Length: 473
Image 1 (cartoon, rainbow, N blue to C red):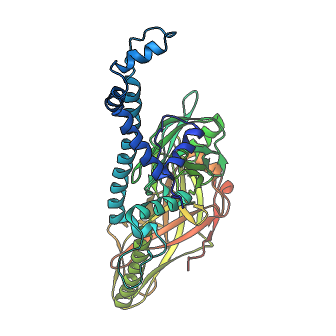
Image 2 (spheres, rainbow, N blue to C red):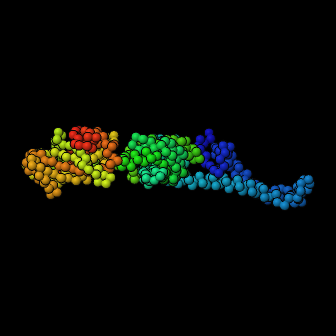
Image 3 (cartoon, rainbow, N blue to C red):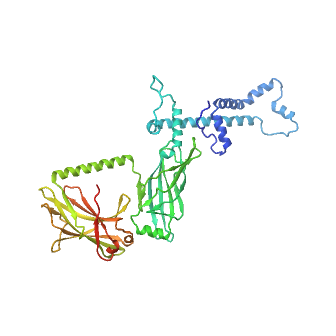
């Protein structure tokens, strides 16, 4: 049967279906290719043997004799010998170049596959002949089988490994940003990004203005290589204002439709959609990397170790906890500092301890977060703290720590003041944002208690009550 593998491109500069059919026919008929090679040698040497053959019948030179026979034709200054020599040399050069190029390519790919692609690319073991330990298929067949498999499933071997947003010009007459994707080609084939549809989302809104390609390194991206494609994105005034007023807002790339293909490769790669996961999202001027399986495993192992360390410390020294008085803790705004608004969280708390040993608290801190699905995005931290003791509300110094020697302390007031951009305040919601108060004690893992502000509209004018956020299990 003819070889079912796709042929190499003998004439890649000629984009014609007729040429592609001729290449496929020649590749699937090796005997014919050999015969044409012999013919090319015959044409190259034809002047010598034709002259010998002609001398058997005539003493005259063959070309003048033939020209005399064709007396109606004018004299030709170009030698007739040039035609067969040129045609034969061209045929031989093309055939030798095609086979030599294909041989070099296959040898290079076989060596590389032996190193790192064989186990990853093949889902089934290589068939082995009974009673032997050698594979039944040759390296040539192996490479073509891998190439066919990868061409049909190219989306599994080409990945978006990084995204980013930068060079924001939000205050220009025509506001713009730049966003880009980093593409990694783990296949043995050459690929290209042929189409990108839809657009990037900021929070829940798609950026609707036009984008322009600024830089492209993923045209004919070779095996084992990576490259970036960058766009300059125009913004409407409303979009620019929304981005300015939401400094920690997320740009999301999971709605992009990215097609990878290569119609000129062998085998041909039909267009396939690449998948961008929900984990590839980023804030302004930040690059986000795709989390690998190794990173996930390392994070899980780190979390288990932290949990074990916390359990051992609590067993050895007893546990120190703190609780917030939900009924009397309040949040309000206290003034301006330039384009920043001062937000004060007046927190009433106390500590409890298990065990007889004294425990020293290094510090209390507070920060404001935003909930995005199951993620927590930081909005503001580095709060200024002023502490007061009850019942006379006398300030006391917390910079040198706080030593707890009894099982339960009295309630104390901790006033945390944060600076927040004016433009962010209108977007704060009662259950979309929360405060986190963190206690750092000697010999213990930092502990925190979260609470929601019941009404940010009330907090802008007076004092709003709070609701404790349930602790994560």
